Length: 346
Image (cartoon, rainbow, N blue to C red; front, side, top):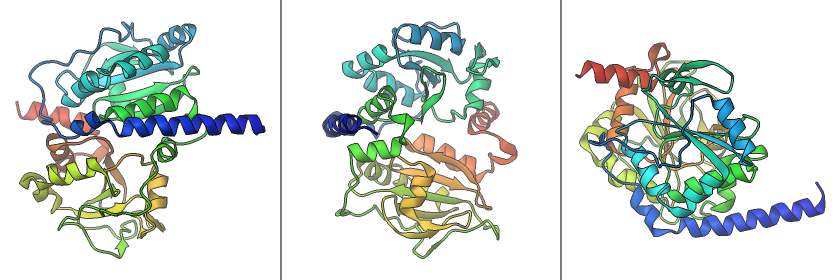
């Protein structure tokens, strides 16, 4: 790499660090981790600047590139989703984020329960619902960022507060996805604490070391929930002070094996698949960029589902039921299981 290119990249990353550092400190972000996440009474309405699409994603991408944009964002949502409302009113409600998104992307809305026909990037036509299930958009809002060549640059599953969502936009627009993970990009902009002054939030149901989680050779009796967290993590504090204090949540977690790691620590661990590693290396291998992240494994060490975005009581309870009731068996997606459960309870 030429010296000028190295200098340019270094300066770009420096400006990113400064910008994200300011955004990270924004006080309004901290009010967006805890909210009532029961289904809404009124439907969520996307902003009027979302593209009115004929749902041919290749045509939509062509239009965006012709207009000198970076690419398109496919938004997967549902009408009564409180997390979708947060994205629309809080993230897109900020003029800087709304303007930046419109300048660089066309956004196409997909209803994960919808029946409209969509042609995807591979030319395959299916219903919105089928596409959402195929793309594993279990948690709404889910966003897929496509670059100008039709490649997936980034996937976001669930709601993220403004500072992290703005970082995701810039990560794609600046082309950083071509040479580094979103995890490493965020770690540069907001380095993890060198000293865990406040420690992690402990819970009585977390297992103690040594962390021998291997269940690939001998099946375990119960599913496993692995909590990846870090110190000085407000979202972690909200999880522990809110949903994890609810009796319904604690009762379900006590029916599982549960363990907690600092995702930046060198804590030794044998993973559910039998690999000897550390918490830091394992988190990097899993591509984790958000704390808290909860990953669930079955009795044989296979990952079932992960929650790696803002989560509150209603969503967490649903995921725990999906795991405990074996809803994932026979490759049934969380979306499909939820639909069946809703129909059953009508």
